[in-house]
Image (cartoon, rainbow, N blue to C red; front, side, top):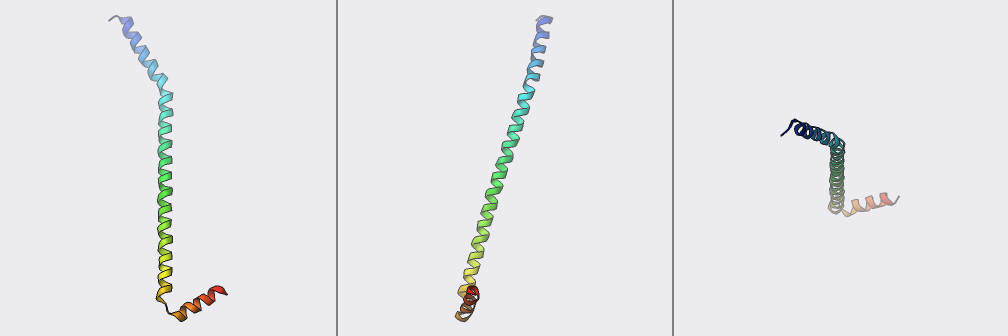
Length: 83
């Protein structure tokens, strides 16, 4: 291989590396952004599920409390709710 061919190969490799720098940076940015959005969506779903569990538990506890009290207490509570 001649000296000119070696210099040409090195120059082309250098130009390729410099040329790909901006596209690699853009690809890294897009990847990081998509991962952040995926984590945000996952957190939103997890928070919604936790809220649903809390609402279901509070409803169950309220109904259980109403069913376990006496009729007189239920009547008094119902009268207070309508006032």
